[in-house]
Amino acid sequence: AYPFNVVRRQQQTYTFEGLRRVAGDGAYRASPTRGTFRVMREILRVDGVRGLYRGLVIHYWKAAPAVAISFVTYELCTRTMLRTELGTGT
Image (cartoon, rainbow, N blue to C red; front, side, top):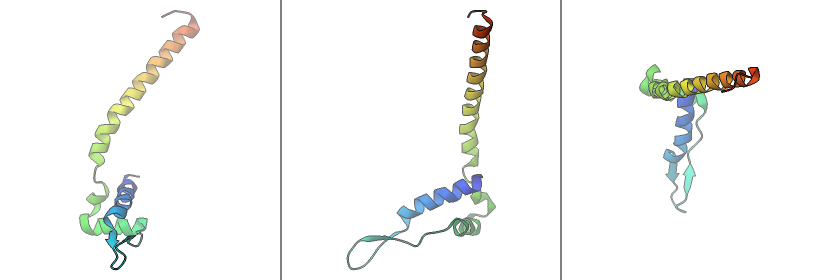
């Protein structure tokens, strides 16, 4: 799933980079849209396979603490509810 996140980010930022000034009225017009596989081919051509996984390490550094906090919170809530249900108090 991560290569598609890289492609999605490229497509989202392309709209800003891809604007070009049209002679005459001075308005900005968007360049032709780039499809998912076209962007993927471009990334592979320029950066290789590693380009599709750009930012993955940072993503894991961010996700690991979030998952740990969720796990600990779930466990603490489960234990608290079980104690309350069994009538053992706090």
